[in-house]
Image 1 (cartoon, rainbow, N blue to C red):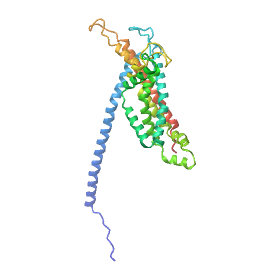
Image 2: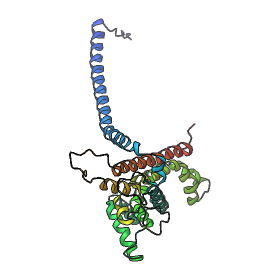
Image 3: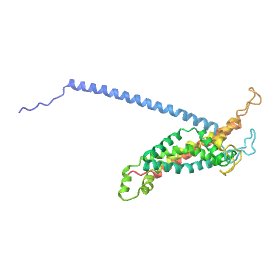
Length: 320
């Protein structure tokens, strides 16, 4: 039996291998740098409109923000009077959006639970199909639907906050269903099987295990849905109307909301300068009111997202 002589690499073979490896490494580095540049470029392109929007709203609306602007209404305020405020619009926005969430969240979460935990067959497929259809409904259609519904129930002159809440809930329900459905699907099946093995009934497993595990994601989905509808203008303009007074009763009388207020003020502020193009004009107070309302609405949405972050941190499952 002859012994095998081990192969000893020569200097030429070692240099050849190193050259080939250097070529491969150079190609990988080139691809890595190219993809890094493309990703950062796409990120900057996506962020540019957002930064521009925030900068424009902040620079134009920050000068109008004051305690009087946030605590007064536009009642008995006419023309270029700078004494008006948006308190009535803030109240209307919070009440109508809160009612819409009160309607949409239980329906959306229960529908998501049905689709994930119980839904089988043609009924589940039909629900999924109609949820997808409702996701693409234009907002003005939701407003017209709510107005038509309450016209049949109350009468043709019905315009109050609850109609706007119903219109917003039509837009909000499919978002809640879709986001909560995805969050429930992320719960591992092993947790459900462990509960079943201990003899826990299915409904209690859903309540104590599935919902408890996904509460952070569910909260985030609900807040995303709220942020989706809180800035709607068309359905509220149709269903709720406008008013310059404070109205805290969503079941009687018209109400004002921040997006409708901003739209109305901006449209009223487009009047030509009284002295003609050559005259020196002071910036229209209505335009400033519109920018101030837009900035306030952005701050409210930002506060909702911060609340969602805190809930996510408090209730997310702890990994150890």
